[in-house]
Amino acid sequence: AGGTPVYVETRPEDGFTVRASGIEKAITPKTKLLIVNSPCNPTGGVVPPEEYERILALCKKRNVWLMGDECYSHFTYEPHKPYSIASANGAKERVIIIGSMSKTFAMTGWRIGYTLGPEALIQALIKLQSQSTSNPTSIAQYAALEAMTGTMATVPVMLAEYAKRRKRIVEGLRAISGVTCEWPGGAFYAFPNISEHLANGGGRSALAKSDTEIAKMLLDRAHVAVVPGEAFGAPGYLRLSYATSIERIEEGLRRLERFFARAEAAA
Image (cartoon, rainbow, N blue to C red; front, side):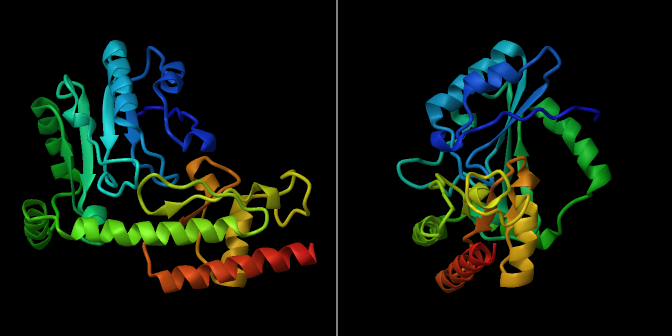
């Protein structure tokens, strides 16, 4: 549509939480839409309800649409709780919600999600969507209906298991020399900072110039797949998913530890 994306930086010391104060500095008279992803992929940052409502008030004041990406909304860890900005007073006229079956109901590959918003806007979106992607299969639609109208009993079970995996991967990453990692407040990704291992990273021998190079080295030498932080506008980081078994996480951590230890010794 010809729009220009503008990114609002978040900080690890704030739990990668986006703030209304930072957003306000980025808004201009040309701003039309704000997208807030909470819990966030890749950082795991979660916007607290009171902060989210300040963001909504700012959007209403500046006549900006607020789109809440809630694909990971049911996967939050203590002290955070699931929260939808759609539940705030006065949200209906200014808020768009994006949701997905892939995460909450483990329906990755079924490619089905939903959008909530004012009727006039949704009708316009239907015209666009129906002519571009048609529709998901009827099988996926019936499966999604069953999932959303069911008891959701599987969700707390998955969340409890993710919490165990989160604990193990963060503790394991923190034990690796030159690696720091914040606790993700939600979703199922760890986002470690490996900038000490990069050129100009702070005193130790550099293993590479960028996190993208590190990601390629990990794949080629250790057979560990990660996503470089540069792909998310966050150089110096790697994204690791813990939506896998504890055994695979343990093996991945062993390979990461060996990789960084050997690379440092050879540098």
